[in-house]
Every structure is written in C-alpha cells, then in structure tokens.
Length: 288
Image 1 (cartoon, rainbow, N blue to C red):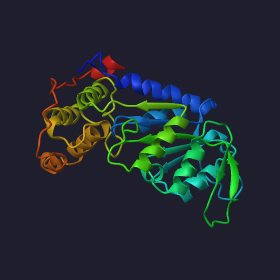
Image 2: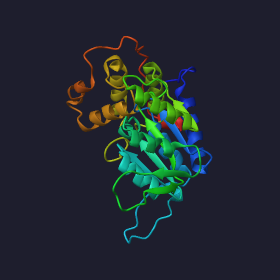
Image 3: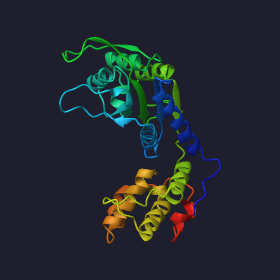
C-alpha cells in the first residue's frame, strides 16, 4: 500500500476547491479560479461537487421552450469571445459556466476580448455585459447573473512567456476573483498523490472502456510501469496512470512498446522513485 506523505499539499488544495465550488453554487462567490498541473483532479473535483449539490449539465429543450438555468452548468472548453458571450447571455438569470482549459479566451491580448472577460469576472451578483459582434440573437447590452468556475493548467500567480498586456490583464482578473487556488507543481507531490489514489482511492478499478472491473494484475503492472518510469514520463498525473492501465488492459502483449511514446528521452533527476505499491486480494474491502 502507499501512505500519503504528511507534507503533501494536494489533498488540502482539492479540499479548498470543493469548498469554493460550494460557495459558487450558493451564490456567495461570483468567480473562482483553480490553476495547476493537468491531470491532478481539478475538473473531476468540480464536477463531483456540482453533482452532489444537484447541479446538472445544461440541456436545451428540443421544443424550443426556455430552460431554468439556475440549477444547471455549461461545460465550456476552448471558448472564444462569441461563445463565452452566448453562455453569459444563456445563463443571464443564473447558473454556472465552467471554463475548462479555455486559455485562448482568458489569456488574450485582444482588448475587446480582455474587457469582456474582466466584465464577467467582476465580483457583483449582476454584471453588465457589452458585446461588439454583429450577432442578432442577443442584445448588444445585457445583464447576467452567471457564476464562473475557471480551471487552467497555467500558473496565473506567476505568468511567464506572456506579453506585458496579457500579464496586466491576468492580474486584473485575479483582482476580481473571489477565490484563487494555485495547485502545487511539485512532481514528487503529484506522484505521491496519484499513487495514494491508486491504492486508497480505488480509481483504477473500473477504468476499462467497458467499465468492467480491472484485474489486480493489470492494475499492478500499470502502477509498476508508472513508478519505475516516473522520471521519464512526459506527464505525471491521474490521467497518465489511467492511460497506462487502459493500454495494459486492451493490449496485453504489446502495451510496453505502445507506451514508449509517453516517455521522454531525458530523465527528470528531481524525481524520487518511491517503493512500488502492490495491490493484493481483499485490498478493496480493506480500503472501502
């Protein structure tokens, strides 16, 4: 088994994210942001809390009738200004917009797009949105009560390789946020946490495409490969271990060869390889 390091900040950071998502749901927060390495569970945590609180994905009525958006959310990826404006208008009476990896929208040096984002993130229950497109399906000015959860893999607390105007724009957004959670980027902490989830979180058990129980031998092979190759893995994340496990399950005779593309030619010398945890029969009952 694998015991989580007592100084690992990830569980506390994910707990903070859960608390802040609940604040968005109850309306005490207008906009929050969680930034950090990909594949550590940001999106999973948000969707879990939304589901636990009865917030469902927005589904448009086929008959064209209006939908009560106040208990729904829109999952928006790779959004640009027109698409974001549409969601702000759709959720003008309330509801949640989940911006996931929509960096092209937020990290923009286009003044009109930057101003749109800043207007949407203002910490007021009702914000005025002014659009500058030629669309005729919404007014040029409207008020919105939409609340926003922004997830990004970039470190907004320390933006690098960005123009001065974008850095200033990001700082203006940060000033408007009700909450900001910056997850650890320490690869050893992330490795430690992924192994903890694989043993105590039971998250590999149903990761086969057919959602059938994954045999212990398959899980153990995936975990061993993940640990032993950690210094050369291009990504250390929950998602990466899932990918390894599914490949081992679906291609038992050539999975190692197929995973070569996930390895870098240069090892990360800062990674400390921990003992490989081994799952044994009866382990699921023991950790349930």
